[in-house]
Length: 242
Ligand SMILES: Nc1ncnc2c1ncn2[C@@H]1O[C@H](COP(=O)(O)OP(=O)(O)O)[C@@H](O)[C@H]1O
Ligand SMILES: [Mg+2]
Image (cartoon, rainbow, N blue to C red; front, side, top):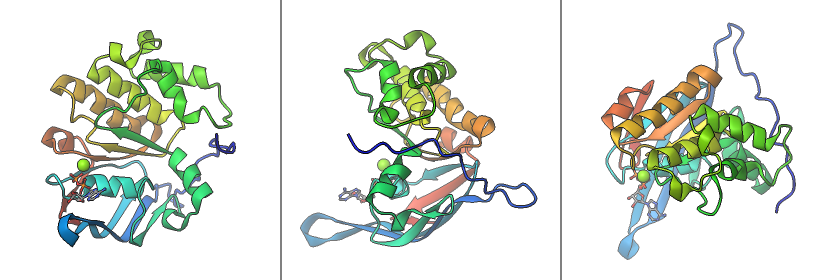
């Protein structure tokens, strides 16, 4: 595996002199174009400017194809923009090189619509997986057990994903996203495959992060009930913010 990188560095304190948290994310002029069919170009992200405060829970909403996932992937550095800048925690993500990008991605928690758990690993081992290759200053198994308990699954630690309901799998995915103590969680339609009760539980966990850890959450959703629970809504259309 790759070189051991310390993922335990403390969060930089970005509070202003009056103790207010400053912006965690500053996006400026962000553009991403994909090649569409028959030589056309799709502007999936079109001159997006967006500032997100530390501890905010922001909903990205808009019709299918409006660029919600693209913006999350750019923010998580899973995709590279054509132009524009992204600063997170005062660091320019869009100027980072490979090793820095890898370290940055490990400080971001991802939750996807389809859970993306590794089917051959237990719930506990899925939670541990993101930090397994790296040097950390905590006991991985103990932290993973705590996180599973915090999502109400302490008695499911040794279960394979196939033995868990969709809602339980997504709660494992939330625990997994938290193992690296991220200050930013990116969630792409996290309740999209869940019934309303299971979706509500996952949403309680994601919005509860703000109260407990002042984690910043950016999530893409179609669901008006999810939007209503967020601090702010960013409406996207054709890759642009409204
Ligand atoms: N890897 C890709 N290759 C080509 N086109 C893509 C790719 N990813 C996204 N797109 C296009 O970019 C636009 C925005 O997509 P997306 O960000 O997935 O929107 P949303 O998540 O809001 O449904 C769509 O027109 C989509 O077809
Ligand atoms: Mg999408």
